[in-house]
Image 1 (cartoon, rainbow, N blue to C red):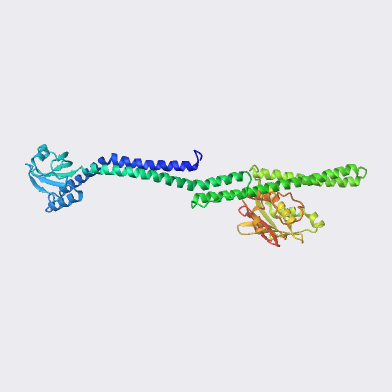
Image 2: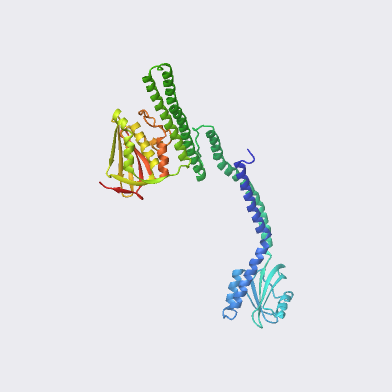
Length: 469
């Protein structure tokens, strides 16, 4: 077992804590017990003296003194100016000093001193024990002496010392045993999690973090690590998809460029018409590469937060119509239907026109790539009380519910077969996500199996104008 392991540390701290508690008991229960006892008895005598002073003129003074003396375990004696006993309390214990001649010295001394109060510590001649005496002057003729024994504390200290020796031995043994089990109880699941974490660092995403201990912090740690493991597994899968898709998207146009360039050079050197066709294909593939590179740069720029919004007022309806017009060739050659529904002739919004154009363009691209056999894409712009809702719908097979949270990740593709990516690069939805987050627009997607998907975002109407039909 390592010297600085969690198991050893917990064990050491528990033992140190136990030793501190034992040290505290030894110091305060043995070394300072005499002082605490003296303070306590002095306080008791003072309380009885105050009671006597307060009720010295009462008719029931004798009963009051007896009750106070009994409660505080002290003896009270009242004498005259000749030190003769006038009254003695009913309680009689080892703290009571008898009226023998050898005990009159301190009494006469106090009477002659003419002081209001005086404390004495004497040896009781009757019991040969230390006794604390509080002398007070009641009036010009009467004096009171309140006595209590100090000896019982010595026997108590001896008993406590013997008890503490046994307590110390038992506590140390129990501390060793309990500290071992506590440290083992806590450190074992952490050691297991550490082992699993090392496996995770090596790319073993099938590891599982779990604990059988009923400790909230450990259970929360296991839950967090399992969540991190799942996210890392998804990230690794996305990384592999990214590499595969980027390499595919780059390889395909590069292969075609090379093939048509060689064909133009070797086979169509004397056929200008064929050469022109070859050049057009090469140009198209270069354009596709340019779009891919620009999308990657755009996405990297947004995710690095170096892309600032340049907001302006513009017509959302007109912008959407311009974007739809770009797909005229698809509508004419491949029978695509782009249905645009809106009630307003004009909706003026305040946003970054160029970036919002990217959003609508990429969402339409996505809908075209995944729509159903009817080749239909529906674009809806609906004005509401607090916002403007923009929807782009397709009629495809839909997206699995478990895939919905990840479709915004770059190069994420669901595993269903779909149409060839006609105009996209695989980065469209990730760009959409970043632009809408920059604008603080609410966005999302709903999907129904075999009925298609609906991507949407909401534009706040804080700074917009619109005209009704």
